[in-house]
Length: 105
Image (tube, rainbow, N blue to C red; front, side, top):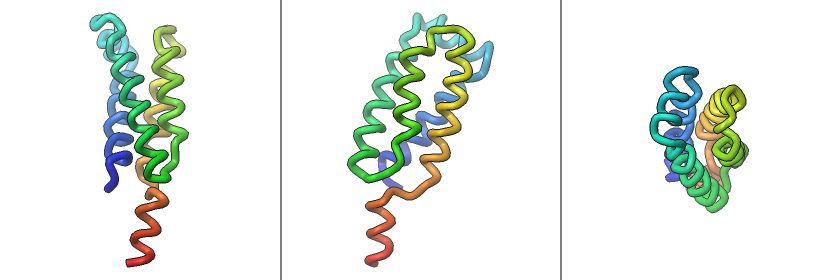
């Protein structure tokens, strides 16, 4: 499994946790919105690795947008949930480079 797919599973799980209504809000507000900055960095790293591996990048791009607008109360919760879904769907797909390597071998 490529590093980008592992990061997609990780960021998808973290987005799912942040999407839980009371728990996610408590984490974000209690830690002074620092989790949103951390998630932004993780999504950017995931996007760069995904582009390198030739994988699907919709979840990472949505995660970046989510990290920028998640400070809005209900919009943030919905965006976290959508990002988690898209990231986990993307993580379940094989990268183009790994699929080519399996075909050649």
